[in-house]
Length: 511
Image (cartoon, rainbow, N blue to C red; front, side, top):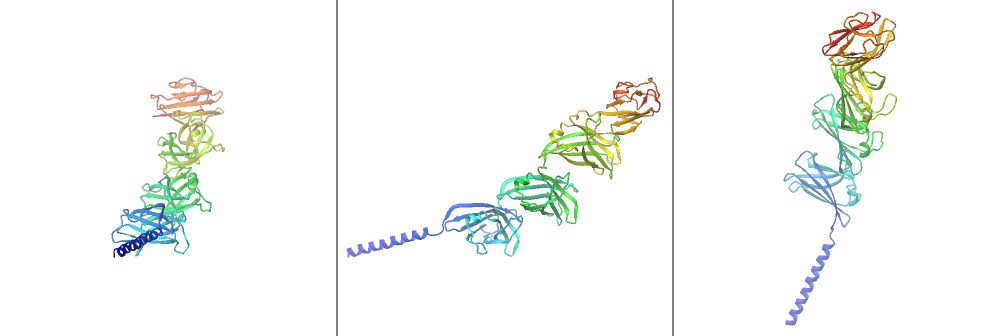
């Protein structure tokens, strides 16, 4: 009996051992995670409290475990989820149904071996997939998204660039355009404006050239929704079909326009230079003094672009609505006068403003921002295209910027009947009346042989009653006669030829 019990014990032990080792073998044959995984961000959509991640984990049976984990979901909720083709900005058809997210846990797990169409897909193919994930509010409200994120080659990197969009027709509307690089090298363009109107859809584009120059549309962007002020566009090519990467966009010769609506494309609500045309924080402002009209004065601001080119912004007060005033950069100082070196955009009378993108002189010679700040020049703003002889604002720039109070007239003569003035806002002015300001210096470069030019207190020929206070070389017919108008100068003086009474006019002195 003892031997039987011993034999029974040994047989039982053998059975238990066999069962134990058989069980361990079965566990080892179950699919296991390899340790390789890739996580993508799921951004908030309709509910700012909901966001999370989607993780792709490789298994040793050539399948992939896709785990969605959200925070902020509601207990009792069930949220359908899918992988779509394309990017979240573009939209696309469903490629793969995922297990719905459990609102209690915020979690969903799906084991994947094929797409919905039966095509096999590996872990490596999924983490390089051209797609995005959508998580919907419910099966009865698929239109409302609670979370969304690009995956695979569409994943957004941490590399981005922000551009400013300034107000155009409505000072309440402005914002930014953010360019974000995708893993693929493509670009997500996010426009975010404040001040837009709910119910209004605003058309947006990338244009060629600068805001100041203007140019044709090269990339259509998704329209800005008025209720949110937002727009998202995935960009990988121009409208012509030419491919363009994120790095190429950051060096693009372009700008963004946002239009009021499809029916009001001529009205801009926001715009801004991008790429190599981006405006930097480096600038220089020059004063533009009044000339023919004491009510008109302002500034010329030179701002450096990323490319090294210059945005020249003129801003003057006192201009007249409906009048367009031509503007130029001239060679030399305002006192000397000189030929036009650069044509600037005309000043609009209603706003007193003008913007010009400058990268070369009129003769084709290139000029950078740094070179303009050392340029031998001055700016003239003229009354109008039909009255170029009248200058309404003027100022020295570049190396001449210190010469703010000197005005130069070049004087010749027509026989013994008239002095002819050029410079100082005059072109071939025959015996013009002059208005000079106290404290300012006026330089008269004389080329009037036989006709000495005198500044006097009475309008008579001869040398008597000459006004010499602040005057150097009074009575010159060649060389330079200089007049720094003293604070106690009389309100009225005269210029007159020493010998010829017809060559004369009034000099009005003002403060």
